[in-house]
Image (tube, rainbow over all chains, first blue to last red; front, side, top):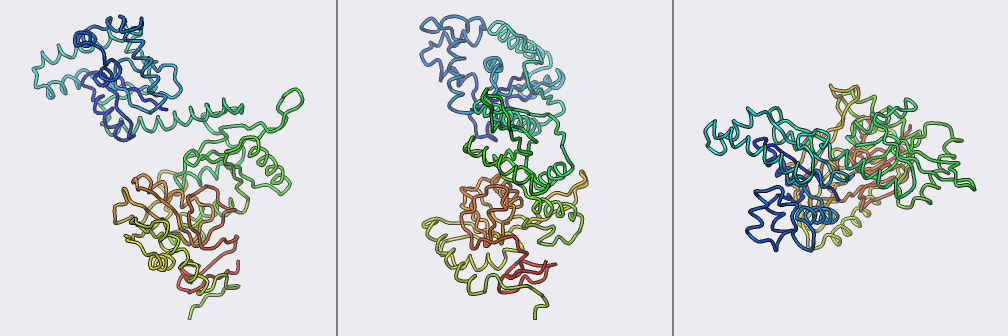
Length: 322
Length: 175
């Protein structure tokens, strides 16, 4: 399952972003308080107080020779296999640092902005707000340093860093969702690729082999249909030594519809060859959904693309019902 | 008189009527005990939609949606967008999208993406005409009236330059 970790500075609106993101995705929001209740049900009030106050206490034994940190990490990883979640704070970005299924986000804001928010939120004086901000920043830094031996402010720990000086909570959520969507898709294709033995291209910028492919990409964009260009190669024939002698790389993958499309704008000889490859892919990789876009369909769709500027969109040539 | 020339009639008024009554019965059985939203896609499905709605014996709300392609100032190509949105809220409801014809399925795919964002309880598609061989995207087409090939069609909602929608039958056009 998928995990999004949110690390935040105090006063950065990170809690609000995590909460809105969890609502939007319908995933559980895992906070520190919830962790204590769920994963350390046998802990005493004294132990909980010490966990809240001392980072080093996470390294002390909880039970059966395992530290609080180890139990926490193991419990979270086990939970992440069952359900997707938004994790807020407690160094979760480090517990999932090696996971392909996790996206790590850091929410920050300038000291001026954070101070202003803290003053308003807690009704504190400027000096008291400064003191609170400084002590909380120190505490967060110490926690990550003592428990994980890492620097919280190390930018390389995060996929995405968002500054709420300039972005609203909604804008942050939209940015995270967009990044998550792409990241999750890449992870999914990578996983599928590994299990099926096919090759993962994941080209960052598509370089189309011919103008028809570029035009078809425009058609898909016109219909708001997300696509990836040649994300995968399916080997379909091997020689006696196991070397691939024939492979098939469908032109497009429609991410939302889990469908590969192969464009044929050429003559019948090549269409027959493509059909043969396609049949083999379906046999060798059951469950893979591949379709061929035939020349006539492509030309009709391309015609529609060109007729868009015509105000009177005729049923067959512009409006709908392709 | 319709000033429309066509090659031959593919589906007569009687064939359409009989098939739509069958579809109505099937939908009534499948959704027994439930309330549905019947959603017509303008303008092509207009007559199919009204006949189908009256052939279904279930509590239902009806609404219409229209999709058009417009030039996009931010790119060299146009974009498809909703030109007439729904008036009713479909969240938590069982929706049946009524189409006149599905060919490649790109328009319907766009429509379903848009509708699913509104979190209905379910979305199924009922199309009068259907060409599964040309379909590029697998859509939840639960009901269809007739399978068709690539011919250019007119009548019973489908047009040629906005004419011919009111023909009571479906005919193949010269192309």
